[in-house]
Image (cartoon, rainbow, N blue to C red; front, side, top):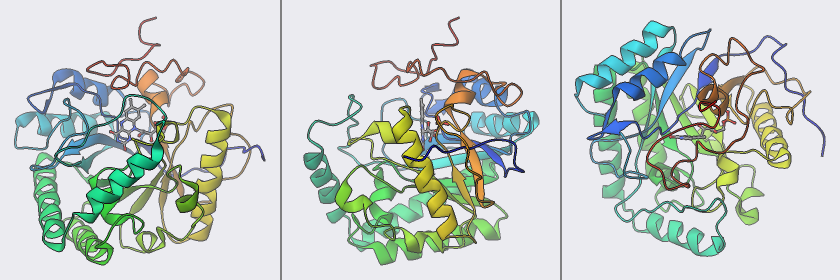
Amino acid sequence: MQILALSYSKAMGRIFFLGVNTGYVRDETPTAQHIKFHADRSGNGLYCTIVGNVLTPRGHGTNSVCARISRAPEWKTLANEIQNSGAIAGIQLSSTWTEYQGIKEFKNKSPENKLDEYLLVAKKINNNNIKDLFSDLRSASELSIEAGFKHIQLHAAHGYLFNLLLDPFFSSNYELALEEFCRWVEYLKANNIESSIRLSTKIGVAQIDSNDTRLAELMDTPCDYVDLSQGLYNIEKRLIYPTLAEILDARWETNIDTAKRHPNRNFIASGKFRSNNARSRVLPENINIGICRDLIANPNFLGNRSDGCQNKMKCHYFSRNEDSLSCGKWNK
Ligand SMILES: Cc1cc2nc3c(=O)[nH]c(=O)nc-3n(C[C@H](O)[C@H](O)[C@H](O)COP(=O)(O)O)c2cc1C
């Protein structure tokens, strides 16, 4: 496989701190640790911090330590602190469903069963459910705007609920979901709020991944950014948090190919951007950089880009049966 060469040397787009579900939550509300974690990482020229995996008012969590958007004053403090550190305050809104359970292992031993489960959940969602879910998303967005967030991302990746609604492979009511999504984007635009949607371009199932045009319509909506991720949580987590060189290289191949095929669309692309595994190809101008683990490991990573994540894997607290985020580097 061709070695990619991604470097910071070219005039690069904006830099985003991507969603992290920290578990720093009490009663579904961010704790002081959650607020400090994000404030500490929102300087050094970062464009936007996206607070990860926040539940809509009636949404279901991916685990028991998810935050839920509300009128609790901590949300205002969080948005303010991010902004005071220099970045735009962003929030990623998300939901799963009542019986949802995330698997602990990184790679599912029987992925076909999980794929069937996803398809079954999607099949049960009717038009009224879709309207209801987007109305809940609208309420979540109103609360986010009230709290001071200026960028709202819909989490439609990793096999969560909006992924199943907006991916035509899963969704049986895709047209309506797409229409509702565009209405949501227009609502944000009317309120001067930046919008993004996170998608899983590849999901680890060859039959689906070979179709490059699966998500084509979502590339043409009026949304400000498409955030390119990969993987379904219950099938192959290594695609969500790529560490192996071959997975990272393949992810950047897809990121670059997608950006080239949609030159008028702004993207956010991630995958160990500064890593030694990912080198030497010029990025298309419509790619903005998303960073997660390097900034988890070192809040000042953007000030010293050689000092980031060392793949200690401790941050995967759910898979390790822990309640909240930690990093092998912090203990030094
Ligand atoms: C501990 C941890 C928590 C994460 N939580 C979320 C999340 O809440 N929402 C999301 O879309 N992605 C989440 N991700 C994925 C990251 O946003 C990012 O896409 C991924 O780590 C690849 O970027 P990186 O190589 O810069 O770390 C998480 C990643 C890690 C390591």
